[in-house]
Each structure stands twice: as C-alpha cells, then as structure tokens.
Image (cartoon, rainbow, N blue to C red; front, side, top):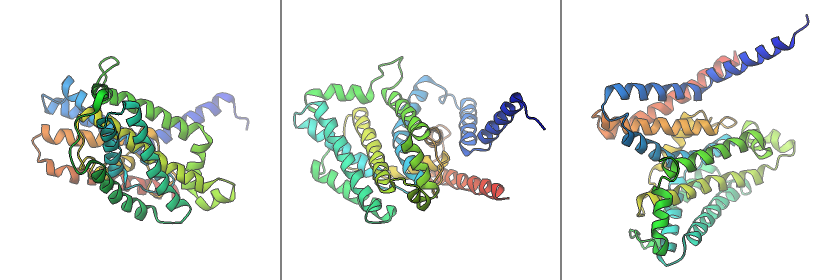
Length: 332
C-alpha cells in the first residue's frame, strides 16, 4: 500500500506530539503552571511584580548550575562538588578584586579556578577510573576548605575599584527591567541546548550515557569527553558564583552549602536520568523553576520552611517513579 507524503508528515507529527506528552519535562511544566495558577488565587502576594521578579532571579543560580549538572548526568556521572566550587569561585573573584585588581582579572581568575577543579575531577574519573561520587564528594570538602584558606574564613564585601561594576553585573537589570541573572540563564540554556542537540560533542555525551562500552568501540573519545563534561559542570558553578557575588554584594564561606542537592534535584525533576542517556537543557530550567516555586510558596502559604526538603525530596521520588513507569511501559 502506497504511503503519501501527507500521511508521512501526519505520522511524524503524531509521534512528535506523543513523545512530548509522554516526556517527564512536559508534566513538570504542567505542574509549574498549575502551581502558579493556584498560588495566584490562594495568595495576594504571589502574582505581584516584586515577587515574580524575585522568583525569576532566585531560580537562575540553581538553573545555571543545573545546566552543567544535566550534561554530567547524561553521561551517567554525578558532581557533588558544585556548591563548594560556587563558593570557591565566588571567593576568588571577591578576594582578587578586593586586592585591587580589575573585574576582568577577578572573573578570569575565578573561571580559571573552576576549569582547574573540573579538569582535576574529570582526570581522576576518566583516566584513573575513580567513581564520580567519591571524587566529587572529596572535592566538595577540598573546595570549601580552599575558600576558607583564600579568605582566611572572613566575609568579603569590598570589591576594589570595580565594586559597583560587579554589583551591577549580578544585581542589575539592563534589558527591559529583566534581572541580569535571568538573561545570563537564558543565553546559557540556549547554548547548552544547541550543543546537546546539534553538535558532535552533544551526540558523544548521549552516546556515553547510553552505552559507554559501545561508544568506545565506535571511536568516541570517551575519556576526553568526560573530562570536558566535568569542566563544564565546574564552569557553570563558577559562572553562577560570579553572578551571585554581584547579586549579594558579599561572600561568606558558607555560600552554596547544600546547593548540590538542589541542583541534582532540578536536573532529575527536569527529566535527566541518573542512569545516563537522557536529559535536556529545558528540563533543567523547569526543574529549577519548580524547586524555587516550592520554596517561595511555603512562606506565602504560612507553611514551616523546614518542610522544603520534604517537598523537594518528594518531587525527586515522583520524578524517578514517573521514569520507572515509562521504562516499564516501553519494555512491554
């Protein structure tokens, strides 16, 4: 039986729509929309311009790091050090500028530190065969300790001659009143999505997460890609650290403590599979948005903030359950 072009297009459209609707990211997006609608009616302060501005700005720091974490998770790895790397990079840019150097030097030093940390993690994991959990858990402690050493465990709130420039970089709103961190997040998300979807590097990342042994046999430079992936993860934490320094106007050595759990949660809730092979940049943003809305809504609804961890943990379990059900249905 002959198949017409129109039938072929219609079949592909149905397959595309089915894939979207069955995807975890789609349902998380629906949950975010429903939560926003509910909170808009349940509270008087959720839908205000000031609160929405705070939500969009606060979500960016977790979202930016979640973009890098998603790439790591797609390869089947994990990076527990991102919160400490954020703190270390924040402290490096703050101390460097406090010493009288320009903002360009401070940012360059911070990014260099992030790449070195990520490269160190990647080499141990890819070339020496260390488990990602162990390596990044160790770096979590090392990076936090180095931040204390660099600052002598003090609060840094003076950033030298470019003090105001750094504050504007992280706390300003240069375009249509949109907070600068949000603009950075959008640009980085588009870049990450393009890399994962349209580049050879992105295909290699998914190939490693799908079947590392098969990827090696087909000529994928698995070790180099893994090193690059962990450098990207650390770089995303470093960028978030620089932005957050400008937003807060001060850096302490407890900055980013526990943030790795929120970042991993954002990636997993957004559809990344901890077993590897699945994940999107858009999913990382949606996962981060849901976490921030949960955090924001607790205060507005008068719920004890200590319940935040329980709600986020429950969201993670639901995300994993959704993935298990989907895999079970596909196996049938």
